Length: 298
Image 1: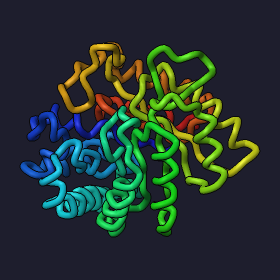
Image 2: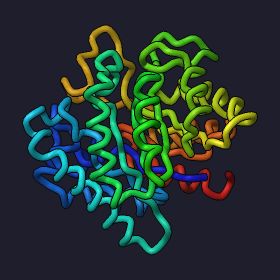
Image 3: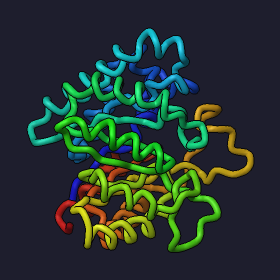
Image 4: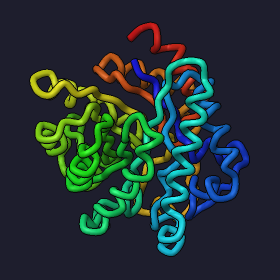
């Protein structure tokens, strides 16, 4: 079992780091990088097998077009340096996952522009590769995003992990789909062409993850040997009043306690997941509970 870290943005907020919308976690890179290093260390001390670079919000959607043009390369390299320094300081094996976010905003696959995205993805690839042990796409919401990510990052010699976000409003049991409305089976099919080392599901409600895990594990039994993973969030369900991922700071669910999250994780492990961590709102204490519950059993 590989234990991932948790939600870096909300951990920075909890630590008192510079944090607000629309910059989200990128603000700490600009104004308080020492907090980023400390957040990485907190997850490592909790038992995570690695950390994810604080590069998720280094996109125009969060920091604006002009700041992105002027500082994206600098901020991406800094995110890599901070993660690498934290990993190198622990006295056990740990890895750096270079985060590659949706280029045009979370939960907004309709805004994806492949012509613009390819250059942005190449920037992430080129600025993070010296610090990374693997590249991790996060919260991709459509098949075309997944295809482009695999195309750009399979050109490196590093392992590639593809993580997609699942629709969690009004879903039909047994029919998992992406935020775009496309069925999960379409993502599984593209993994036959350019096989990632791992396929994960992230930044969705814990309740919708098990169906996707079972479908992916069943599919990969007879196809490419791809690991399956999951890291859910603690956000409330999006509804018709949802203002967008960087319009406000949403309250976290009170019922996703460390113990409750570990209960979900045990179900995911039983379903076949071999990589488990946490997304937005999942703290180092949640990760410690995952380590305590799962590390010796799976």
